[in-house]
Structures are given as C-alpha cells and as structure tokens.
Image 1 (tube, rainbow, N blue to C red):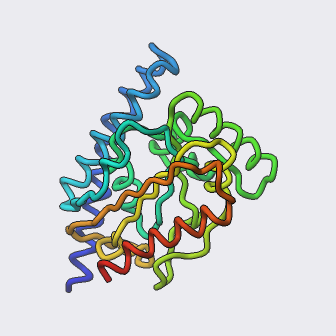
Image 2 (cartoon, rainbow, N blue to C red; image 1 turned 90 degrees about the vertical axis):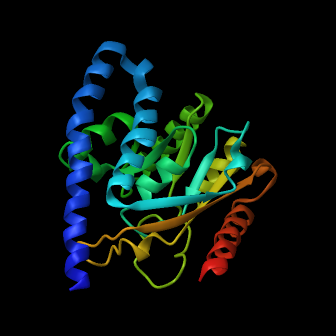
Length: 242
C-alpha cells in the first residue's frame, strides 16, 4: 500500500513540474526572442529560484542547507554533486544561491517541453563523441570566464547502487584544475530515501540535507588529488547521517 501511495505522489509531482514548464516555457521563449542572450542569466535564475523551489514545496520535499556561507564572495565555481535521484537537479538548483549552467546529455533535448529549456540553457555533450566532449569542455571554460558557474555530476549518471558513491570521471576536476576556478562540492544526503531511481515511479515528502564545501586553490592540485579530496568530503558528510 505504501509503495502505491508513493507512485501516486510521484504522478502528482510530475504534474506539478509539468504545469510549471508549460507556464514558464512560453515566457522564456518570448524573453529570448526579445532580449536574446541578455535574458539568459535571468531565465536561469527563475528556474533555480522559482520553478525548482516551488516544485519541491508543492511535493513536500524540503532541503536543509549547511555551509552555504562558504560560497559568499567567491566564484564562479565548478560545482560537483553526487547524483542519487531524479530530485537532484531541483535540489541542486534551489540550494545554490546564484545561477549555473550544467552539462547535459544531448539526448535530453528530445524530452517534450523540457528539451527546449535544455537546448537553450545547458551545455550539451554527446558522450559517445570525443569531438563533442572536447567542444563541451571549451564551452564550459568560456561560460566560467563569462561569470557562470558550471555544475557537473562526476559520477556521470545517477547512482543506482547501494554504495554512497560510484567512481568519478576526471572531467569536472580537470576543468577546475585547468581553469583555476574554485571547486564547490555539494553533497546531498540522501534524496534516494524520497525518490528511488530504481523504481519506475517513486516519491514521498521529506527533508534532504545539503552540505557545501569549497576547495579554492584548484590550480595547485592534481586532477587525481582533487578528485580524492572531493570523494573524502562527500563521504564524510555521508557518514555523519548514515
């Protein structure tokens, strides 16, 4: 019975998110047509600080943020987060006080309505193409220099295992080391309790703890060293609550 209720709540959550997209997509389309790229930061801010928190509010998923003061007066950042549920993108966005672009799989543009937003506001990559990966890396560096933070999931995709983390790819850490921008580590603990990606439809209300850490001197570190430090930070927050 409890599983059935979680499925019903998941359908409700999808409807809440879908209605917001239907409302905001025409508005953002007009904004782009009128103002072009000048509207980009404003539109992303709306997504982070209107659409994401409203969706979480109406579905009863709340976030308790720790350490956000570390971000004040710094940045832009290369942001990394663990990735355990479909809720993560909403929690990531609403827990960050500014705006960021995120690296998205090219396949995401095929999703109705949402795909339009991804195409306009995200940095797309075809993971099967070495050329596409190189181009996306260059676009991320350009976006950082333009004042945008960049969010990446170093695990590459949602962690469907029982382990706290799956192995990290190098990309996010290489970007931080080569660009010299600080690395902001966001640890979510644990959204999977409220949305299990292994199940087809699953959602329930609850509170997700979000922990921030900042590593500033990235250009003095190796990629492997930065990766290891990030893993240790995430695992330390995980061990506090599990």
